[in-house]
Image (cartoon, rainbow, N blue to C red; front, side, top):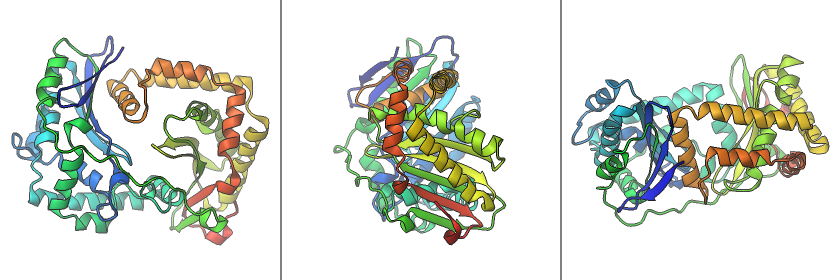
Length: 419
């Protein structure tokens, strides 16, 4: 069972002991990401994340900082989303004290040296180029820019090269000081927790000071134009394989439909025995990879289907996807499909939760986006209650072909795409 409490500086703490696990993950999350940025500062959340590894007063260089973690054989990294930024270290549990020390030092005392800030713009520009040159990595950006055209949810998390090269140090520091405060922080410790863990968390994270209350404002989500010609975007690119991604407006975090939506996606395209995998890959050999899923945000969400395939097969795949969607809406799913999907979700979740970092991420997401923190077992009990009627209901709400958005990267002409 987890423990959830606050430090005196209002930093949230979640302790998640896991029996029989020798590792421990310390994860610190902030409810800030790319949708909180102004147009001028697009990508700055991701930039700040990079800069946290560039040295502190105690560990003045990147090498001193990373070598101290590397010598432990630790897994460590950071990540930025549209609504969150996180930093974590996973070590042998006996080194947790060092994880606390390093993470708190980074998040409270990073130097943001002017020369390092300028130097780091180069790697971020190259990261942006890497994604743009790789259609399989970039199709998500292209699709979400189409789905959420006109609001920050559609922007690339990393911003653009122009944005990154234009950042001014005072603006970056102001952004960091606005959001990186203890009262905006969630510290999650999962895995091998000892009697000393609480004292360590208090010692390392309890000393941080708050400024004024961080703003939680962001522009509301919006969906792009409903005109059919505006719901298709093709990035023509000479590639051997084209990337196709299509999707529909879905549900925000916390809506009752989220649970059935997940089960529905498992049946539609969540495994090698799913409907889309069988129809598109196994029976017709059109694609190597095809899957469905969903993304949720605070005030919006979408369901997506994506595939990698030869350009000449784009229309065949779209037609098959549409047919399978229409079958699910009109005929629903079988009892066996539903039960198998539930078993699949339980099995994959159970396996993943043997990793302390997965447990930490689970509770971070719960704390950030839900009114009540549910344990994985509580979520599985909710999934068990999903009925065939629930699947049909959600499918009818989501799968309106007049709202579909289609994004393609590949050697394809827009005029030739039929949807």
